[in-house]
Figure 1 (cartoon, rainbow, N blue to C red):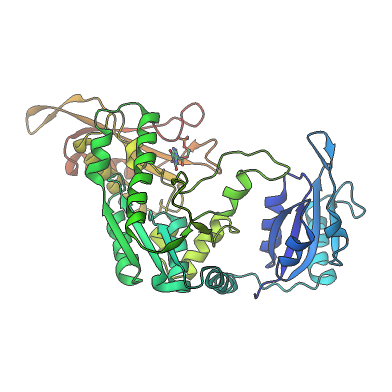
Figure 2: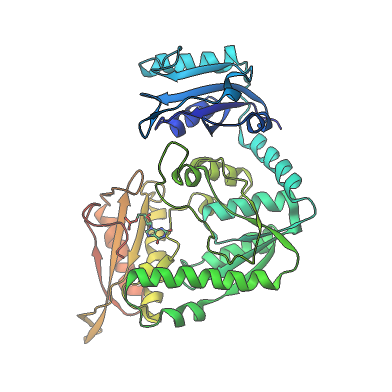
Length: 429
Ligand code: XMP
């Protein structure tokens, strides 16, 4: 293992993740661990150079005072308390805090600033090889950032001991399934099972207008298709997942309640028992992207905007029909192309089109038409909990509108959604 580590002991602070990021920004790897960490668990962590007891304003959780375990105090590893309770006390002021932190890390602990993607990738390759041995690993490769980076890393670590399954549910954006086949199947030479399950998904969704039922059907059918493919493969004992650090932090720690239940592929039947391989589970999202870039994945795969699991299924409003699904896919592709051309792709957090399930009157080629509208949405946000509307140059909107009206079949109006979140949500369903 090549990286030194600073361990943050969680004593109920809400700032554990930001402290970890602060330390990593200084070039030193950092992980958060529970206050009652055992001696063996602590000893098993590689290259621990220092420990920070992070208690925030106090060390009280649910009315009970907590402290770090004896294992921490007797470890002999340099330790500092970053709270108002510990002897060292948290310094006030940004600069002073930074100075204390870097003095502790580099002077007291003598940690090396050797946290970088190259070392991380090499360490993970070694760890994955050790974990997997001669075993075989299965990965559900959606083509999203996290699963793509896991695939690229595992191809490097274990080559054809990895099998990737890409389920095309027919609700992906234009060109996405093709890119997965091109990048992973051809360029990186992965064992790739490509399943075109479009008809299956659309048959199940036919006539279903309720958005939550649509989501449930898509999720359940995804697991069913993936499970069928898994059963066809022999001797798989590991399941790789694109779990990342925020998933783990949000699933709740010993001192913080769960924000959301975390499951990536989740819900596989009990008789399909796999050991998990999660090489990105200690990375924050921007680090996952940097890891993907370092592994040579294309920018439009690594830096892409968030895309919901149910895909275009929740942007083709109401009961999904093939004509409207095609129209939303084509209009979304035009929007993405024009945003990229105009330098907006890296500036706007999320942008897409949605298509409602009502039509309006128009006139085309001197004849009355009765066609669908398309809605453009372009928002900026930090955490997707609230969102503001990006002020897009009118000329860009004009160009997108004209192209959609000229190129997308069955569309006679383009609307721009100006509603912030709240009151509106980012997606329409
Ligand atoms: P809303 O519409 O709730 O969206 O403001 C917030 C963010 O979450 C994404 N989103 C989803 N992601 N499965 C997902 O994986 C879903 O069912 C889903 N619904 C919304 C949405 O794209 C936005 O980034």
